[in-house]
Image 1 (cartoon, rainbow, N blue to C red):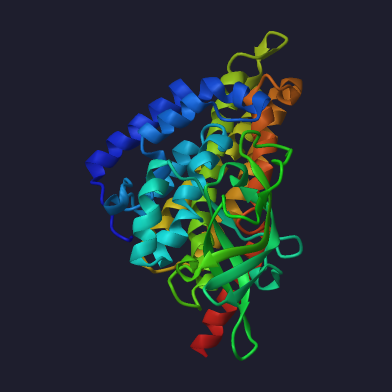
Image 2: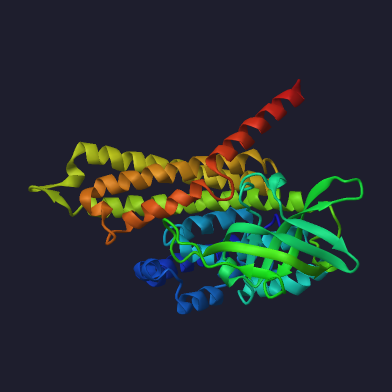
Length: 388
């Protein structure tokens, strides 16, 4: 989907409604989400009612149908609160749902997308493995052709929403008749025999956003489980979904940075050192200024990247640039936020403490910062050499 199915006027209402919902319904529950390590069912139901499980899916399949720029703006708003909240429906809209939306057959779309868009089905993206986190070509999970389908065996790690997933986009290596191995992707319902999901991981941050190991032990699927209905689609589906997802991660980073800045400004306007507000100290103002610069630059970069992706001008380098800059930026902003708060910034009572831990993951998933550097650098060289 390249063109928006939502008018600018309607999008303004959607964005305003989401902003109000986040501040009135989600932010008050942030401590509860973090302490209980789960999203309240009432909040999940509200997210479903708002259509958040399908905001990036076409209206034809029951989604809202936002374009890439609108999705980026929505991502900035979603980043203003607990990242676990967005993670609950992030894979449906992003790396998992987009595999079917972008590469599935009409039958696959009809079977799965409506449930994914409504939130009745939770889709999960099963790509990462031990020793194959950033390089899908190194994966060990294999799919072997059988008389009536495929048999999938292997183990995936750190799979977002795995404990609550109804279906996995499972990536596996397939060896063709020439002996060449290629990455393919299969639609694997979580209730099939041979699918086992481990306990959810205990992480540094983002409590409430569950990840877990997923084991496939000779899981039998029919031929129609192969995404696209024919070999040769898997690697492209992975790379395309990840590239688009990087814009969302960058947008979330901007939202988190804005929240840190707002919290820091509010604290600096009431906390005193002696009889003087700390916000009147020039060194504190310098930190606030650096935070504002990062937020402003990140916001402009994300929206520019989304426009370039949507137009097709740059679907490869720009998303990596945005993710690299914005996720590194929010780490620095979060650190400054803790510094502005002083000792209070190290206490769980203050949002900047949680954000400091939560945003660290943004530099790791959907391609580490180092992988983004390699993508940017290698593609710049390819472009230059093509000119010669």
